[in-house]
Amino acid sequence: MSERDALIRSFLESQGWDDAERARLAGDASFRRYERLAKPNKKMVLMDAPPPQEDVRPFTAIARHLCGLGYSAPTIQAEDAAGGLLLLEDLGDSTYTRVLNAGMDPVTLYGAAIDLLADLRHHAAPAGLLPYDETVYLTEADLLIDWFLPAITGEETAEPVRHAYHAAWRAVLDKANVGPPVLVLRDYHADNLMWLPNRTKHARVGLLDFQDALAGSPAYDVVSLLEDVRRDVAPELAEAMIARYLSAAPDLDPGQFRDAYAVLGGQRNAKIVGIFTRLWRRDSKAGYLDLIPRTWRLLEHDLAQPVLAPVRAWFDEFVPPPLRRAPTP
Image 1 (cartoon, rainbow, N blue to C red):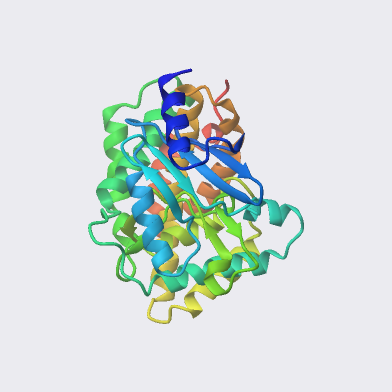
Image 2 (image 1 turned 90 degrees about the vertical axis):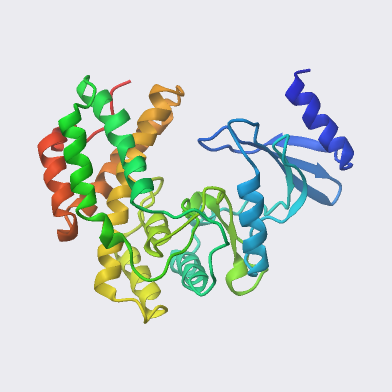
């Protein structure tokens, strides 16, 4: 038995769950692992987030904040923060992805998710939450030129190309700010949302994977939901959901919000192209390459918006359409 396995066993024993049946749940792109623990008439989820690669404290802080607002984040049943272990409420198996694939009405699901985001604007972000600002945006956008561009061209990104990339983004990133900063969950999409129809109002939307939350633009999570790199969202549905959000936020200027949506969509999708390439090259997770074509389609849609003209010009020069594809394994 490894030292990590022994720590987990000790943690479960201390909580009376050492005799539970354990089943691995689908993981994500991080070092975190999840297991479902089952006893007669009772279930729990174990989060195994090994330090130093992971830190459970941001997750627990945001989970408690969200629960305090009446939203359905998993409640924390027990924790060993130093060891990177949590026992969490089990929200079940009905992810948005699964219920959408089973044929549930997408307007109901996406409408509930949009309504939650509109409501979240009315609550202050937790004190001390770091800002989602230009420095972070550029660091994330660099993933495209640090990982994707070298993989697709066979050459490291030259410094003049890097400087031009930063200049293009700096020319538009101020348009991302629309209204006061809000809690940005950052990975708000179908795989990380649960449908909980037995709950009421905003609690029907279960929330997962929010440990990287920052304080930033209210447009970001709307983009994350509607420009989903893992599944197609019909353009007419996306447009209806943007209109629904704006109708619930009459204090926001619609034109400024749509510009912010385009800028953050472009920034996010450029980042994700880089992340998926890194997962392949560094972490040997080649399956993520299959998601890059959809991500490029979304990014090209963003680049077509007038507000992103400086960034589009950079892409046209340095990543022309023939290079906008998944690298070859």
